[in-house]
Image 1 (tube, helix red, strand yellow):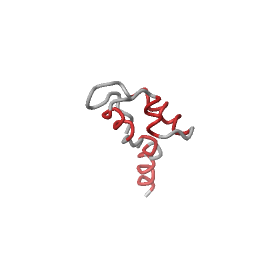
Image 2 (cartoon, one colour):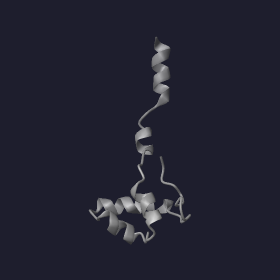
Image 3 (tube, one colour):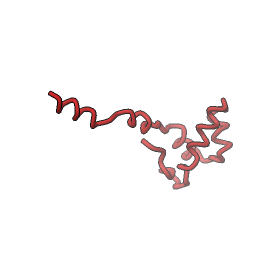
Image 4 (spheres, one colour):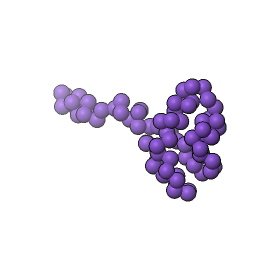
Length: 74
């Protein structure tokens, strides 16, 4: 869903680095270089950022109230 605030393994705060990571990727920087620029040296923290899937943006497109409106019309 949303980026975890802390690394699950070591507890380092990584939630504040997600937007900067996306900006680096938008500038055509490689994933490894972007993680180095964010000073994420531990492989557990790098894993947390690399494997995160941002589903919250996809879920915001769905409105459960639309279904109840459609059912109420029938």
